[in-house]
Length: 236
Length: 299
Ligand SMILES: Nc1ncnc2c1ncn2[C@@H]1O[C@H](COP(=O)(O)OP(=O)(O)OP(=O)(O)O)[C@@H](O)[C@H]1O
Image (cartoon, rainbow over all chains, first blue to last red; front, side):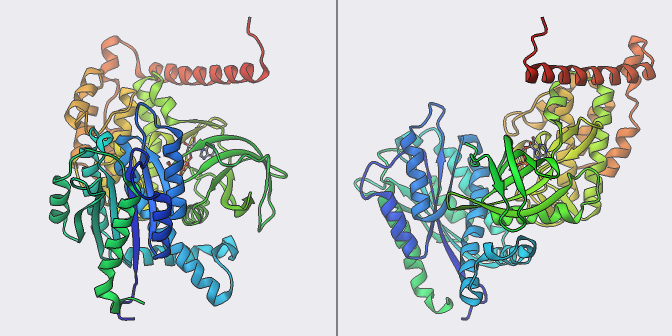
């Protein structure tokens, strides 16, 4: 255990529709969860109104991926993305701490009396500020995103800025889907802490094609797992 | 949309028994319900699945319990429905309305300023504790009908000086206007207060990136707001005036009667009329409410 604080692995899907190509995103999310990655999702609500199936899919993905889900209008995407990020990090830590508590004292946080929870909460918060983060943003760039893509790019930049204010190191990667001609997903940017590298990756994105959400989740999961391999010695 | 569908909940730890009456609000963190407690009578329940945020909010509210602008809080507890655990705390139910109504009503300028001054004093008091109320907004400020006092709800956004701001609403957030960063400092707070005053005066909300500050100032000018007041707001927004107490002092020095003199109305009379109008509006609202509830047809 060289590093004092561990690393947590998260993936967030930003989409405005339902997957229509490749493996089921729910299966992909559940596999990612098995690999120790938390999968969350944000659904962008269209003014024309989304179908109920879209909403259900996002909920199912985040449930299978052990993460959270939320919906918002395009104008609120920035705020939702940041709030969601903070929430999922805390949520993941809450689960980890809960598990540890369970193994030490045989009970989880909710079996601590509410009066005494504040100490655990403070601990999680401090830890959350310091823990390192591998954060893959999985951005839907299918045709329906045409009008929202520029906005989404700005939100990703804002998020990176907010993450850089944390005490722990936050590495952000960007997976866009569909990928270049024929492929289902594209690694638009490998894990980085540098804003200009992320911005370069964002700049190249264009909206076209279908919505292979499942394959994109697989790509992002692979990216996260691969990134960790060389640094294995650092982790618990 | 609201998640608590059952009629009654019982706290897992402290066995508080609540009859749910109706949902009264929701936000980023949770949902608020009006409920009836077997002994305490009407209370507001804040319900959420997020253990961390509700525990933190409860903790600050309890810590500053004595302050009269904070709703009294009772217990923090859990309950279970359909195998899902929810967390909640019970607090004093504030019967009244939030500042959005005050903003939309065409009240006299003096009265709006008087209300704002009270809010500013509350915020200054919070700042004195080394905390920033980062999510200052109309929806989080309530007028308590029983004694016409100002009460704040939603203490989830209290942030220590110097930390990053995590809870905010773009309209009141200087970063969204491109006028600074998102750090909890005194100037962040004063900025949000100035936006609150501005929207209170023009009677509607604005969108940060669309209406740039300059066009917002133009709207103020069109609304016949005294120039000294506009200048003050502009100075605060630009960061030339920092701190709620300084803002307060400057605000008090402004002679609001200058415009009224043109119309020949004595300012004391104006204040009395203002209070009358306010009370009248308030009574009318009550009247509406009772006739609505009782289903009485006025005709
Ligand atoms: N004690 C109370 N009495 C009466 N009404 C209340 C009370 N507390 C909250 N409300 C109502 O419920 C609404 C939502 O509450 P609150 O802001 O606490 O929720 P939230 O989930 O923290 O929202 P957000 O963080 O998005 O502002 C308020 O705008 C107010 O109208």
